[in-house]
Structure formats: structure tokens, C-alpha cells
Image (cartoon, rainbow, N blue to C red):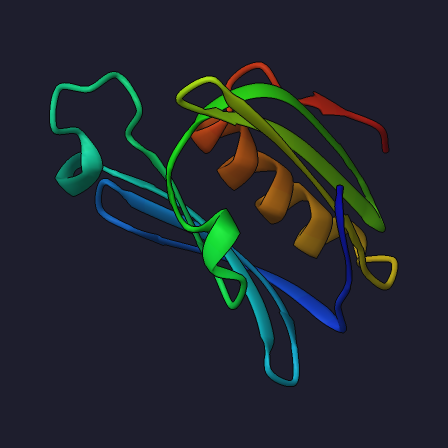
Length: 113
């Protein structure tokens, strides 16, 4: 399991493109979904990371979000990968925007408020 501690979380929407970014200095982890990724492979969800093992189109097996924690288990082919991200507590409005964006990207995510 990859564990990451970050300083900030942000969510961006531009038309049919959604992105949630977890950042700390040179550590970046992006979760993206957009029409441009929908190439018919049923995996339009895309991850960008500074760790090459965690880059690419994946299928989400499990996801959890709270005000300072995000857990993601994905499948890339037959390989399972787990990511745990810890971040500072978010203000209510910031959390609700990240939650909304992640629910669009990952409809089966579970959340704790």
C-alpha cells in the first residue's frame, strides 16, 4: 500500500472534466475523469502520480473519504493497488466540493463527515 501525507486537497471542474488533486511540495496525486478519457475501455478514471506505478487508467474497487483521509483500491488489469492519503482537516465547504467531485468520478465512494 502506498501511503501519502499531503498539505492540501483541491477540486476542479471544467465542463465534462473533473479533477481532485492531493499536493505536498513535489508529491502530487491527481484523480481525473473526463469525456476525453472515455475511449470505450470502461475505465475512464485516470490517475496521475509522481510514482510511475500509480499512473494510468484504472477501475475502482473501493474508495473512502473523510475530512482528512482518502483511501483508494484500484484494479489495473488483474493487479490490485491501494493508496492511502492523509491531509489536514478541510473546511466544510472545501470538503463538500471535494466530496461532490469524487462522487462524480467514483460513484460508489463511501464518505464520512
